[in-house]
Amino acid sequence: MRERFWNLFVATKHQCYYYRFFKKHCDNKIAVLKIFLTAVSCAGISAWAIWDFLPGALPVILAAAQILSVCQDYLPFAKQSSGIEYLLPDLELLCISIETDWNKIDDMSSQDIIDKIEYYERSNIELQNKYLSSFAFLHNKQSERKAQKENMAFFASYSSQALTKEGVTAE
Image (tube, rainbow, N blue to C red):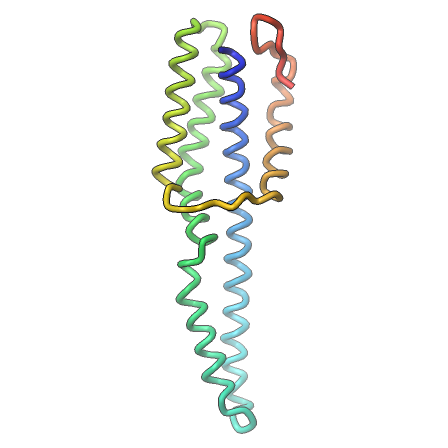
């Protein structure tokens, strides 16, 4: 049971890191889109200067900027960023609770550990359903690599702790 609890701890912590990096990834896309919209708007303004040479340029540029501006809130990465923003504080609190219980695991019975695992798994599922159920997430390899690296650094302090009575260690 200790190993199962450890795996839950590692997976949940990894999830926190992954969502944090994925949110940054989405926020970067949003920033690029906003910069692009600003550039298009500026191009629209500058098109007034070339109105005599290209009379159709101004309406096309302004229409494109307006369409992109309206669509930006409906793009998947904007919605994902918003959902993750609400999820992360609760997920991080869940990680703190799991870590606290991990540090007290030697004082728990097997049934207590089983109950804690069930509670934390249910809590995680409830959080996912509450904040992210309406999104389909594509796996982001860059966010995954960064999360894995952070997770390994975090758990380095636990590397010498025994996970089970049989002597399995955390690595």
